[in-house]
Amino acid sequence: MASVKQHFSGKTAIISGGSKGIGKAVALEFVKAGGSVCIIARNKNDLKTASDEISNARIIDSQSVTTISCDTTDMKKLKPLIEAHIKKSGVPDYLMNFVGYAQPRYIQDYTIEDFKKNMETNYYGQLVPIIIVLPHFIKRRSGHIVTCSSLLGYLGMIGYATYCPTKFAICGLTEALRSELAPQGIRFSVLYPPDTQTPGFDNENRTKPAEVMIMSETGGLLDPGEVAQKLIKGIMQNKFYIHPGQSRLLWAIVRHAPNLAHKIMDGEFKKAKQRLSKKI
Image 1 (cartoon, rainbow, N blue to C red):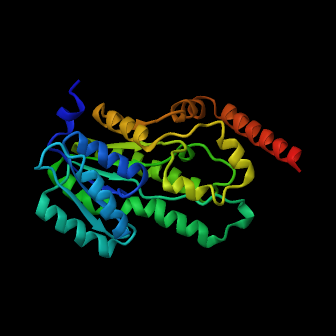
Image 2 (cartoon, one colour):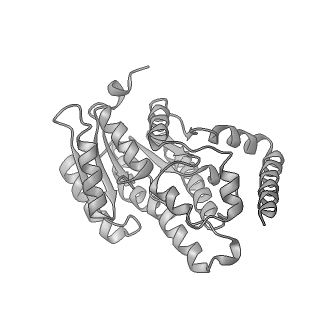
Image 3 (cartoon, rainbow, N blue to C red):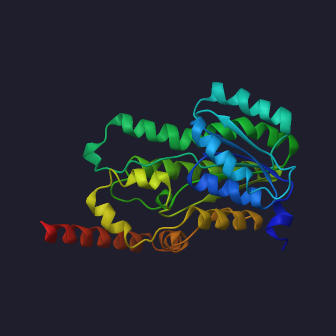
């Protein structure tokens, strides 16, 4: 197998959600391997900070690190910006999407607007860049699209009633696109990260139900760099499913013994409630 630098040197990627967390870590790994990136995010200050850090990781001067400041759910604003980037820099080899957030709560504390907002960001925020870039991949008959789901994209959990459906939807979308476009030379990968130490994870902890905080203790916490390295390796191996950390084991249990998966989750929930009751 070729080395990471041999595989990605001279390649290009558009990375949405690339200013923080897993997205930024992936951009860093991609640039360290000799590639060029265009990162997309809403906040200009975050983009500038990320761009500077990623630029410092370049191994040759010809590598480029560019930015687009835009909400990826906004097709009208985002399309001309991506099209302008493609006109200037060419069709990318990769489109990678890491836009998303979670705001865990008890079901009775959500409104219908919470469900709509989470779907708008987590699903449409990844779908819109795909719709924009895909015609270029189809015309060229090549390209690799990465979507970011979650461990909770195949296993539901208390506190994530707005989040889980969005991540299940990302899986379904990517499966459908893979089926339709594989004959045209377009590849797909879905990343299923478990809990990862990102700014988004810190935000989650502000609203997490107490039981969820306890249940999360047993799952461990990955560094974004670990997830990024796992993704890069998976892309090199042309893997569709990419599972960092414990995600792989849980995915196997859900696939082959779904009732056991429910039993495990129900047992963890019960133990968490018992711990809480002892504190009262």
